[in-house]
Amino acid sequence: MSLRHSTIRAAAMLFPLLCAEPILAQDEPLPSDQRLSPVQISVTGELKHNHCFEQPHGAKDAIHRLPATARNWLAEDAIYIITPEERCAFLRLETDEERNQFIEQFWYRRASDPISLDYDSKAEHYRRIVFANENYGGQHSGWKTDRGRVYVVFGPPDSVDVYANRGEAGTPPSQGSETHLHPAETWRYHHIQGIGENVQLDFAYEASHRDYLLTAPSQNLLAQTYPNPHPFPMTPEKVQLYVDPDRSPKIRFKDLEAVLVSRIVRDQVKFSHRIEFSPATQATTLARIDIQISCEACSRAGQFVPWPAYQLFIRVSEPSGRVVDTSELTADIAVHDKSDSRLTVDAHLDVPLAPGMYQLAVVAKNAATGEVGVVRVQLDVPNFEALETKH
Image 1 (cartoon, rainbow, N blue to C red):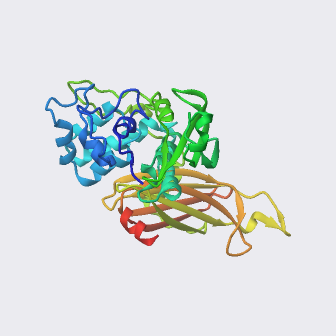
Image 2: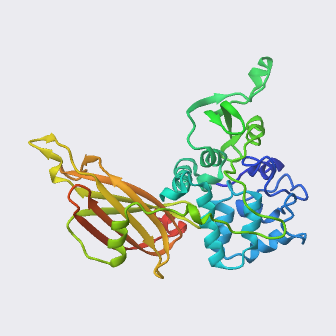
């Protein structure tokens, strides 16, 4: 899917969905027949209100100088949720190391509890993108459509009404016989910050786009939202990268990390894993990791009995050793294995990763006995095109 709006409202509504002032304000209105992709929208605008660059085309030039991965992250991964200040800061960075640090901090600021290693907002963001791709895709990636865009920003609606045929909103009853009927959807949210309670968003199917587009009243309604979690510390004179050192993520399972770092071989806890990849954006693939721990002690004489909880320490690293993701989980729910009647204790983790090679390490500990198992495997993360080709 793409941002299909072929009218001026396309450029005007992409970022007002997220911010009271357009993040990529246009100096001149775009032609009404010009269709815009996210990348085109990213490079056409200048940060008029933030004075990010003195040169007339400073932002456009800065984007063209970005490496492809960084450009794709800005134009696809973060396009709906990045603020004008953050975008300005990102465009002023000069090295890949600085950009990687910025992206890490970008998600850190949005984590519900940054010190717990629970970057749930990041994983949830990419889960929504994948869901949109799988359910709203067609000519283009699903996250680029209106329904996908709303889903990515606000999550699943609380209810959806689907109409096989409905007339244009606002059509007088006397003209009903001449009204063109079309499929439509109404999404309802109990609450959207910036709008209020009981929010209704209407999508009408437009044959020329072969997709559902937000109606004009719904677009105007969404222009009131502003999802920026915290002000970004930046002055016009100096862009600052900022992380509070006292709020760095804290490791809970330090003993499991020590086992991993020491590279001690342990196989007291037997477990298997399965990894699937889902295409999200050009810059990011979602790795979906399932871990199954055999639980022979979970039943006795056909009856469930209390079973131990397992602590899991999971780390993904680049070949250089740079850690890109660390997660801690507790697995304590036993289920029947799909392939046979055995019981397993399962855990699931979604990890957004740039395509490439990684080392995945998993440490599992029986909290009752202290027994530990370790698995290390190579992770070859495919890119968007490779995954799309398989479908």
